[in-house]
Image (tube, rainbow, N blue to C red; front, side):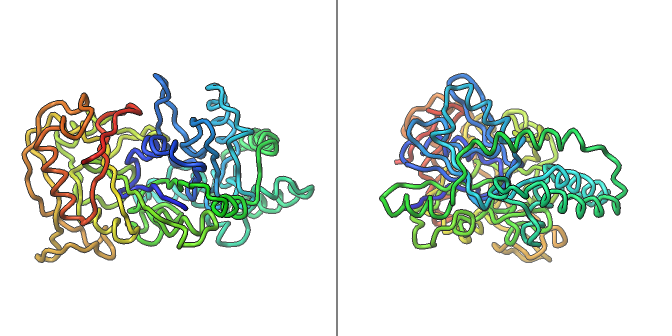
Length: 421
C-alpha cells in the first residue's frame, strides 16, 4: 500500500513537516522526483533542519528512507546532508537507501544551468542553478550517469566523455568560470556515496509492498510546477504530480491509495512565472514577513498572494487528491479581511479553468472577500479551539474543491497540527 504526499501550489507548502508528521505511521518514506532545488524544513527538538534530497522520514526510528530513481542526486549536497543528519545520532547505514537508477548531477550540469540562465537575460525562468534541468535533459537524451554507474570500474571514462560534451556546450555560452574545485568536491563525495546502501530501487520497494509494508511517497516542489501541467515554461524539470510516483519509484498505479495534497492557507511562489493572485502591495509584504517567506534552499524572498482555488481545484483534479492538509493557517491570524480567488477573468469572461499559457493570457483573479479571524490560532490544540471564522474559511474551501481539508497546521512545531473533525 502506497500513500502520497505532494504539493498543490508552486512548492514551499510545508511538505517536509507534513511528511515528518505522518512518517511514524509508515515503514518506508520514498522521494520520487526532484533534486536539491527542494528544501523540506523540519524542526527536530529546537533545531531547524532543511533536507534537500534525503526523505523527511529520516528522523523516525524504524522508518526506512529511499531516494527513488525519479530523483536527480547531487552527491556533494547529499554528503553535506548526511553529515547534518548523522549529528543527531541517526545511523544512515540502517535507514537510508538509494536507487541505482537515480541520475547524478555533475559539476558541469551546475555550470550549464548557470550559463543557460545567464544567457536568458530578462527572460530568466528563476532556476535555482543546482543543475536540475541539465541533468534531466541528459536523462531524457540518454546521456546521463546514474548512481549504479559509480560502482563500475569504467566510471571515470564515462564521466570524462560526458564532461567533454558539456564543455562544448559551455564554450558556446562563452562560460569561463573555473569549476575544478567543484569537481574535486564531487569525486570526494562519490567515495562517500559508494559506502551508502545502493539498491535496485524498484525491486526494493515492490518487495516491501508485497510483504505488507506501508509506503509514503514524498514529492518535491508543487503541482503547478509540473513539467507537463504547470505554468510552462516556468516549471521544474520533473513530474511533480501523483503520476510521477509510478515512474519515479517503479510501482504500479493500483498500489496508490491516498493522495494527500498540501496547500498553504494563502499562496506563494519563488522565481519567475505567472502568479494571478500575487500581492505586490503592503499586504503581500506583510504575508511575507509574518510567514517568513524566504526560500529554504535559496533564501530568495517568496512572492505572496491570496489563496487561488482555481489552481487548487486543478491540482486536486490531476492528482486525484483524497485528503488535504492546510499549512500556515496561523500566518493569517492578524488579517482583518481575507480574499479567496474563485475564478479568473479572461477576455472579459469568467472561467474556473486554468488557461493553456497563463503568462500570455494573464488571467485576472475574481475574489470573494472573507472576514479574518483576527486572533491567535497557534495555541489551539483541537479543532474546537480554532476561531469560528477560520472554520468558515476552511469549510468554503472544502465545498469549492469537493475535497476536504482534514488537517490544519497552525505553527512550525511538530505538534502544531490539528485534525479537522
